[in-house]
Image (cartoon, rainbow, N blue to C red; front, top):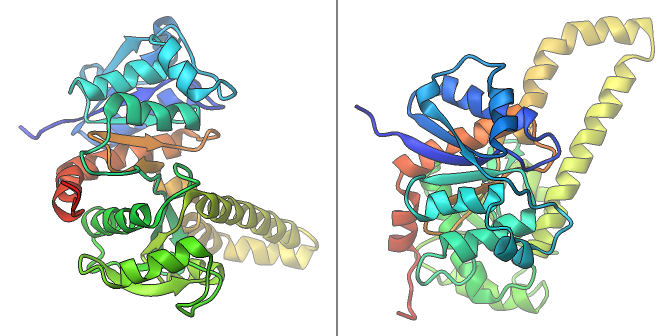
Length: 337
């Protein structure tokens, strides 16, 4: 019998909870026989939602959690006070070994704080980074960090580069992933103090395939597989990516509706356009893993629909099968030990 990947899912987190979260969990279980989902949240509400669907009842379990951590709440205080919240209960399932992974569309702060306080960091990892996959002309790249560490040090960025390389190689199957640091120019002497200090460290790091600096305009071309930066720059890149993508799609659709000729043209190109736009849809790539923890923690968009929840759960299977945490322990050299 194949080993199950057990995923704790915060059923109450996000703008579309519990409707889209439960649907995504059911879709994931129906798509992959090797997944068991533990939905944490208000039992009666979650079960009422589950009653709408057909699924293997052996592979979805509801774990009661009466409290919900709201987005506006101070994360540390919420994690410590709301012990029976859907996020804390789910994270404890990972901590005690009941589950291999945790997925949430809820409070980003609570997920980041809870991941570190409850699940805990791998010994030697200085700062766990949030690392989403972003679509590019050549497929996708890993943006690391995009939201966990706005004030990072050079040693943190070196670890991000190593962890990102492990992830792209093992999960995405990219051989010798190209690593680049986000900068305002291609020259080595360009950048702020952090970039200038980090550049030579990455350059002299034998564990990674460092190719130098990357400017923001080159990110969508797929110039690098692993894009390294602190979370302040990373979050700006991610949000701009999302905003430009959504606006562009809106403008293309509006342009196609301006005349009878454009409407006929739109009808003809619709299948090809739909296929192309799908590859640039961030929802297709699932959530962002918080790398460097003792278990897998995945944060999805607050506005996540069922498709992103499903894909986030499915990516947990690859993470477990490829033993990402073990590889991070092996390949991220912990010189301070």
